[in-house]
Length: 444
Ligand code: PLP
Image 1 (spheres, rainbow, N blue to C red):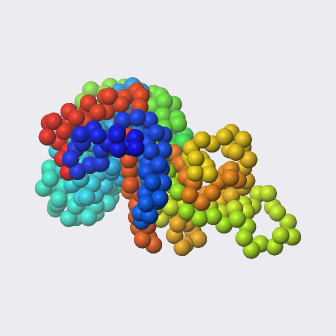
Image 2: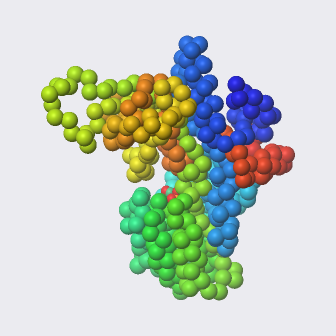
Image 3: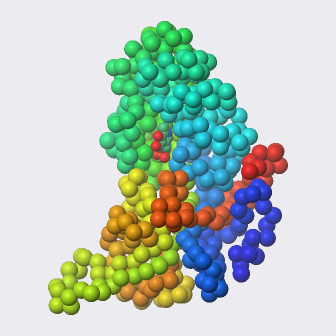
């Protein structure tokens, strides 16, 4: 059992699952082999779906960030995936953290992180959360309305406030402007109110929307931030912080970095005394997690009238897998994602001949709950040889998946198996995490 063999590494953080070595696909197969063995031994829930997290991908994304956006400090958006290993690795690598709640702040502080490395980036906070932030020494926080200013004046008068402005989010998967962001026209009034309340406003933030596929949105947002900086000056503030938010995509990151960098040079040519931060979430984790799910059931045209005409675009086969939209695939509903299954095992074997892979039929893939909204893939083309008991894989499952999964119908959230990868970055990940642990950080 190679999984157990690899498990022999001493745990870096007691209480956390072991950090394995090797390529994630190896661990996906090992996990499946173990599932087959547990099933043979009649273990309940033997075929449970599981994630494989490759921390070297997170490490690689940080390297990419430093290379293309060295002038911008990343504050990882915890909401995207508060995985214990991801947080420890990023903490060890020196990022800051964007927290949206008391719970996230406490989770980050428990790792031994200095509260100065946290921005409370939720413009509408419960007063008790503001008070808790004050007690914990978390000073940096966003606002976009006057009521929030009154709240902060009462609960955290020493806060370092950041005004979140509204920007064009129409080129993003998840638009956030419907809910947050002060229109530029309202900023002078808000700053006047902040002055009146004796509050310190230190800078400007924006968020172009999560999953931004048009890099130009960042240039437009930086231009608006420039205008807000000028409004700050008129109100008597000397802003020193620009927070360019999240929205960074893996696929167009270099292009976005170029556009953002150009806009920063154009609108903030003199950057003395200016700290630029960002709140990336998806960029760091999306590609780092894959999910293996078991085909627990199949319905193949049973009960249909054989004389009915067959529509080739209408799937006749329905596969039921053991994670769905109430679990990891909530990203389909909340995060507007489309997922693409691939075959990991076929007919109980990992050796999948090309010919079998090519003999496909149209099918749909469903989650395990009793709700018909629980559809993972309305139309896919998978091999006709696929059987109950086979496994499907899904890549790019690290962002906005586990964190919002429920246990509806009694289905548990899928576990995570961790690897530091089998190639570039693997040794660095282990060394960075071990160093973090040696300094006494990150114990559960
Ligand atoms: N910052 C804030 C305030 C957010 O609301 C979000 C996502 O909703 C993020 C950062 C992270 O965005 P992304 O994952 O697109 O980088």
